[in-house]
Length: 276
Ligand code: DGL
Image 1 (cartoon, rainbow, N blue to C red):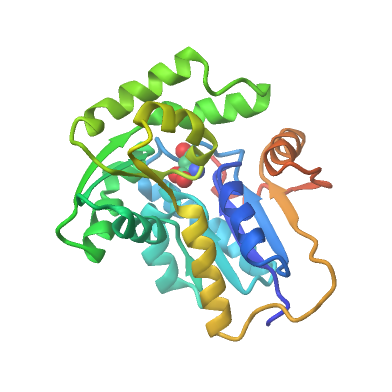
Image 2: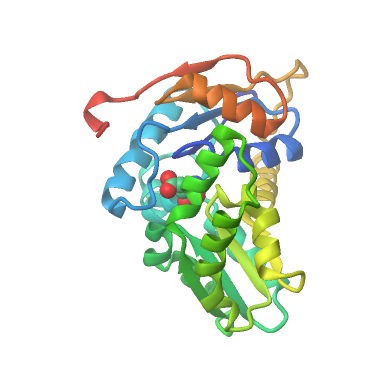
């Protein structure tokens, strides 16, 4: 069991922000990353549909004999984490609770903002998670449907995220919650850390920006430590990348994002019947 890989997945490349933190936190672990680029974006889809995708991917990763699964997608976490934890006999970690905990620990005025996809924001999963840690915190949320597209396009064309049009889009989304004088902002979508520079410009330097990636990586380490399941094999880990869509595009984006060449991306569209 100890030497089995960790499975991580997202609708696309956004979850690589979590992959990269887990790699930093646990450099000896083998990781299989699955990016569902055939079905991205998850954000605008009904949560029920996203749930079926999440179960579909978990089945796949279980078939790869992983020892723990990270749902590195907020929309997937909001749609299916509870049910997945009830259904499958393997530790499954989401990204919402770790981000909420980070925000509650950071806020001083107990006014927290959260931005995410339509699915995540409408599910109110962050409001519930934040209040479970501190019921006195007020959460101001905004769904930002265009930001995932900006990341995907920006990464593909290597465009500058600071261009005026993306800045204007982000400012439009953030202005209402900034008016509430939040002192902490949760990036409730794993694509958004790639826009952190631009979002900091919009928010100014007085707002602490929380991404779930670091907190999630710490949680994964703690679970494996407590279960005595850290990898003991000392051979160099070999991460695997699997994508349901264009593997060349994934390789390009992934390599650029991770700052190193990804050797080979496997193609797997999973169970055909589940693909829409
Ligand atoms: N990265 C996903 C998340 O964290 C969203 C991207 C999508 O809409 O598929 O919610």
